[in-house]
Image (cartoon, rainbow over all chains, first blue to last red; front, top):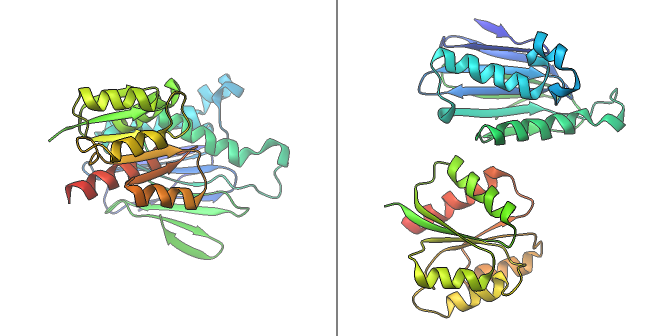
Length: 158
Length: 128
């Protein structure tokens, strides 16, 4: 089954036949997390770096922000049986899109935010496709944890 | 066998960052020592059994360069693998360091993954 992760959304699964996918990653960042031993995977698509910008909104929708979004996803995966130590993290997005006011540098700030969040959690980034000025699609096959990024018409393994 | 690692940097924050990265990376170590200068590091190497050194270049009292030169001239510590972690950007200078015996190099500012990968590469090469 194809599980679609919307913008400001996170989903996880433990079904080997599933594929998790998120579209339209511009300045947003998609985070694919996979525990190969437990065969549990999850994906987050967050829009903004820091939940402190709007605490109320982050309570209603934690997956909008890097910090609350990752906490939400990791917690959900652990509840399913995954272990933080075994989680492999791959990220994509953080572009500087043409319609972004350059002054905000959302893509760059989103990237810095996920680095900080993962550092605090003691987690590495195992692979990344970050920056540029183009949209990306991020997908993960649950059978083997293979993560692919589609951008500018081509698909590459991450 | 677990090893003893020595982190040499005059910045306590930098030492803490490297220390945390090594912990995160599941690198098996027995003891982790810290030194704030090349001089202090050489003393630690004399007093303790050290199996891997991560060292900055620009430090007060004694630079990382002088420290490695002294190490390579001393039979009891010359075989300890050294990874330089520095802002040094000159490829020629890095090559020179490697030709003298430095096993690895990580450019500052670094990501935690770069430190992890370089440490694993050097440990792997030493155990091969």
